[in-house]
Length: 295
Image 1 (cartoon, rainbow, N blue to C red):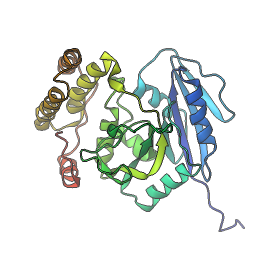
Image 2 (image 1 turned 30 degrees about the vertical axis):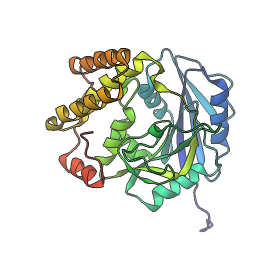
Image 3 (image 1 turned 135 degrees about the vertical axis):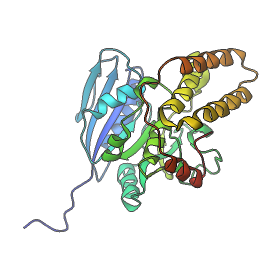
Image 4 (image 1 turned 45 degrees about the vertical axis):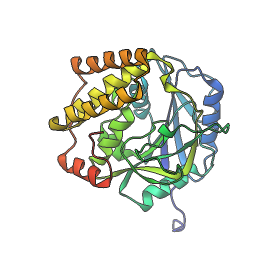
């Protein structure tokens, strides 16, 4: 007879996306994965326009012939892994605790209302961590946990059925705000997106505004985010709110604003790649939880 005390370890499909430009960081992240205890992993490294080489034993490689963007690259990896859960880890991120995945899964099991978990993000070198890594308006203490309505995408864990029901990462976005759409689509399943301040992932503190395309894609994808996901009555409200916020943030950065409004116009002009509006009941749940999807 089987030992009733023996329990099957949770299985986790892991997707790490890389262009091969950060080999040391990638090696560090993969090492942190294979140090995990209490889980079984199925790990794939997706080379976004790159043939992954020098991977540790247990990590499989997928080579995409060209850079298809971050969301599409992650989705290609998802197609190749199996597991009860799906975990996304950027190639410059790592998880310092060997029980990180086991502890994160324990939180999901203990509270089935959580459909997506993002840990607290810390720069391992001791640099001050950007406040944007805390995905809530009132940032507060980074160690405090709470429901959130967007996620930092570099280390995210979901039950596999929840991820599948979202429809995957927003491939047309290429880069920026795909974590907002994923979070909204988790909420639309009657679940919550959760910021776990007691769990830590490491990532270097860098400034994303160092490139003009950051401003363009940021604006275009804000418009697309609304067009793809919000009830039509909220689309202009959401876009107008973020336009005002951007004007306040970048009033002294004329070059950034020019790039931003170029993306803003592109977002209205170009199709967003499909539409699946969240329900009004989801809008109400998000509002009651602290953040209506209009800002």
